[in-house]
Image 1: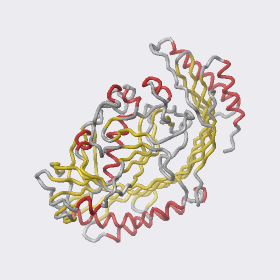
Image 2 (image 1 turned 60 degrees about the vertical axis):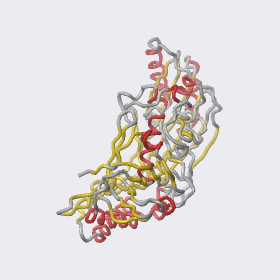
Image 3 (image 1 turned 90 degrees about the horizontal axis):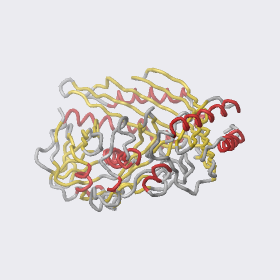
Image 4 (image 1 turned 180 degrees about the horizontal axis):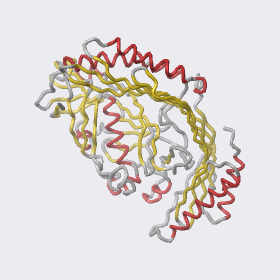
Length: 480
């Protein structure tokens, strides 16, 4: 990070002298390369770089934000003037002045140190990987065709320096890597299946060796070929259902993470990303599940896609228990919403890039695992279904009613996996899922994603995950 912090420190003094009670200056530099391919042929390659400074000020109880990629002293001062002007222009319209909580903010420098620098990962190498993926996948299936294989890969280095008027100083550097493949399998009599497989973590080029994407994708394609050709309908009667960690991860992201964002609880996201079934008075009082329903949000997991140690307001990160043994426990907060709720911030403020304002975001969200093995989880199920992965899903605006269509799925008979099941549909409410958990195994797995939120929209890297989860007596639907 070559940008001079003296220019940022000067802005803190200028903003305070101009009447701001709080000044936050964030230098952010995001850069990397990307490759997009279809059926082994290149659709596009390129590099990106977004470097600039975002400034927030609190003036007369109103927040103002401005950003610039003009990193000269004059350009930065102009952006500060814009932020102050915007705050003042709406201050008199606010019925409730904005206040931040008092926090013990960080003074720290940290980075994720890769074994292989992302700068040493080449576009040519990623293109070769994409060609290999298509070639090997095509050769791995025999009863179906692979008409579409879309491959994407990206390296992304994110550098930040955050300085605030109340003493925060946080310098960070986090490299991340992302690979995805979107496959379509086709059989002339049986139809199609579609699979989106993603890999994403913080780290360097060594992640490709750790992920082994070609081997994983070949294994997926072979199993999905069997599901497509030989899959049967799910049972029509209610049965025990084992929900795979991939679906559990998505489910907790959507039905615990999003509804526990404090700004969504307060209604700020209603016109963009939806509302929340949670009301402020329900926190600590409303039971959404049984004692096995603990959902944790933890940005500090090493190697995670949503990794950070301090948020963009300089507050130290920690695990957040959204649901604790079935009880709605803790919302995700920045310093503004924490003040409204009468609590401390739990460091959930993040921005996509320098030009975006920090808003409340998830990081790595997961259901707490249990202690048993997968075999123990299913050994006493006489008749049931294991839904390992999903093909499609949807959830309503308040995060209550949801539906997941299974992709790789199997009948459970006599405590063992049997024939594949085609298109089982799990339709359930948030409380219905968390209240019907019978058991969880110990195999905690995480899956990457890019979580969208805000207006203008911001996409940020996250992980979601969990163990395999057994729920009791569920009547599955089927998608045709």
